[in-house]
Image (cartoon, rainbow, N blue to C red; front, side):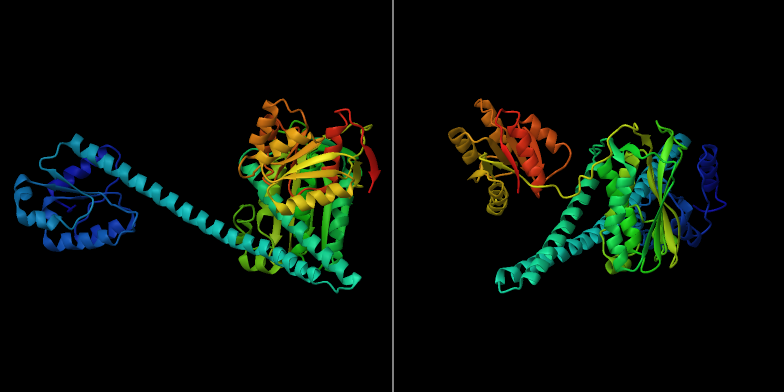
Length: 521
């Protein structure tokens, strides 16, 4: 607008009466400066209509970001609107609305309010676009790092498998190579489990099961495993436990163990020298907590520490504190985000208490403290090796489209004295199940021709009561429920654990009246 003119003064008065902030510009330079700073809409009156001003305005508007379509309101007389010269001047202006004089105040107000709402929507879209670009960048970095974390152990597995296949190795080298293959396979499995667990939490499908657990055994199990890593780095791993804490608590031992391994393991990994100290205590819960108390694990290290800007990214699932540090020490950046979500599901939290760059960090893990009865049995370490049990004489039909899986499962079953028959898809599995009547069916869920779920539904419709165990690599909560609802009796996640396989088979056949012979393998 132009300062000092009657039109400008009238418009300014109308807008201010309705609480709309406006600035009257006396020349084109002031107007273009306002556009570059905070303008949400521009009103141009007739007296500002000249070739130089409109050309400068047009250039300024075309310099706006791609997302910006600044509303331009031009107030002209009917004569101006009928002038070809005027129309030619207006053509270069984008997002233009022309109002004919005289303009009623309510009409002007309505149009300005609509222009401001449109401008607000543009800023919201800009912010959403910026967030989407940042999220996409973070995920791209995450996927690149995840690819590295997957390819590294995978390359080791493939390389040492080729060496084992060549033969001519000493027994010592053969055992060492097999150990390397198994260790890297476990790394891959742990990585996949972290991704799946994060997906469960994000989807609100994480299942928490409170079990009576020995606190001392839990601490011993976690620290014993991590002491090997600490010893390799010449670190001291210290544990302080408040003696007044109960020996037995009720929690989800699998999730708590996962959190402790992640947080304490990180402390060991990012501490080149010095010590890692774990202090265990209890305190009153400041928030809503049915028990009123929290079990607190404080993990303090003398490691590399964090800068403030790095600390702000710690608990974001697809972000990492520092890409160069991640490349140096390894990891995907999932552990902290997942641990925090798991701890919150257990009634607590994971947070960074303090960190000093190049000096160390302190993390705090808290969970709701559910004290178990003193007479309860202590927690049994489910992660420890379990004796293989053989079910001699059992006949199992394995339905799986993967020849490699058939070979692996067949080998495990044969070692246990189990007779095995194979089918490559659900349709073939249905025919063999109805014809051979095996004692148990191991059914892959995803197969060509006929899926495992459809095959099971078909068998149940035929009146087949043979126990059927689902095999699936998806392993998300909800998959189990879907399988059981489709007629499966139980569920095993891939990769198949030998002890779980034997135990699940035993549970299937004993209730049916068959009494298998259990022998240690």
